[in-house]
Length: 297
Ligand SMILES: [Zn+2]
Image (cartoon, rainbow, N blue to C red; front, side):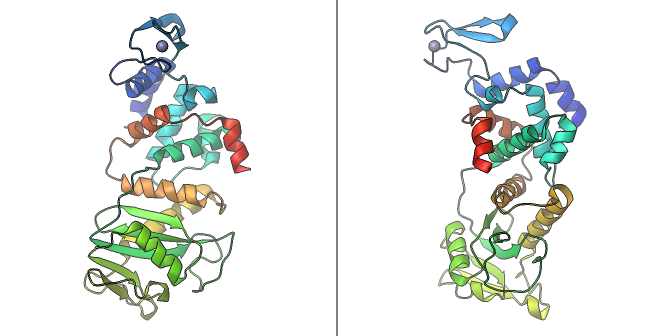
């Protein structure tokens, strides 16, 4: 979907409301209170009336759309911008483009990113690549070590060849931490794990899983099909996105940005990302604005 199509399809509150109704009740409107399907419409007020329990509601009742008191057109535009921008979009940019306050833009960005995160996370199999890095400024690409820095934690990533990625903030780059990360996301019987020569990966192979590494410090990057280019490509996209869009990123929000990157990568061939994100938003729990701002403080 391009920008003119967005305005054509979702340029008014009414069009947005109709679309949300389709997403929320694909088999016809149901009363949120008693599940009755006998509903009357009070069209002039966009209200629905339950004929059984007399509950009066609208398509946004009980959703975060209602709670936010923002026009639906802005929600739809924000969802479009966040899901379509390949390298991510900052709250500052949303603020300027949607003409909303910074707080509102921040809220929108976080809710939409949250909705983009998927819960169903199968273990990766086949050939997987694992790599870890630092995202923050000064430490970027510098040295190897086991130090901990609360403001700049390392991030670990695993990519299945031709498949999905998992990206996480990790405690450190120790063997225990990296082995734990791999065990959490990779099937026990995976065919092979490819890494670089870092000591933290040593011993990760076993009888049914080959472990091979390329020696980056000796300028070896590819040996036959052994390389970590997929996961390194994800890091480079992520870093360019952060430098280009976010300017700075606090360690506190790093997991949310990693989630977004992961979701975007895993859905790189999903043409329904916009719709799927709205679907999560309309079914999701309404987390009040005040509560979210409080949680982030
Ligand atoms: Zn009812």
